Image 1 (cartoon, rainbow, N blue to C red):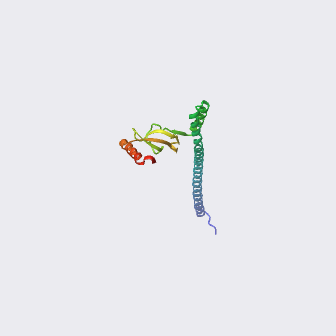
Image 2: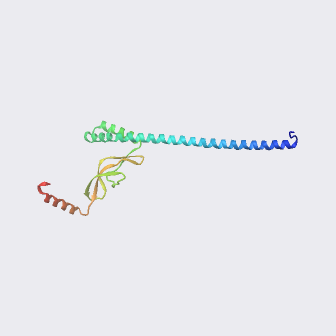
Image 3: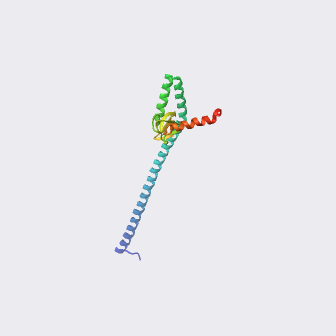
Length: 178
């Protein structure tokens, strides 16, 4: 015999409360899952955009590295020709490279720093670790050295006279073979 009356309504209300609370809990789980998925997607978009920027920078850097020898050759030609038109072209070329973030490493007269300079020759003189000549210009992009400046460094020697005496002695010992 089916239950009728107040007892039946209580059972029905209890199962309805249980059913509503499970639906609310499931809804909360789905909302949390949706939030996590949306956050993961936004993180993925940011990561992809950062990778695109890095790839663009790398491409630009590789191109700049390929163009530097050409700039060196143009500047070398200008030193010999002293042509006004060539000077304009060099300036335009440098402006484009600077717009891409290229910076020349100022070396002449500076203190030698192995982080920015590569010593190709050392001469004895009055100063210690002073750059006296730039053989090849160095460049940086975003404060990262892409090519160190190749320089001649002056070294101070308290024994300059001894060095000279040693050289003279070697020449005398070698005679005609030197």
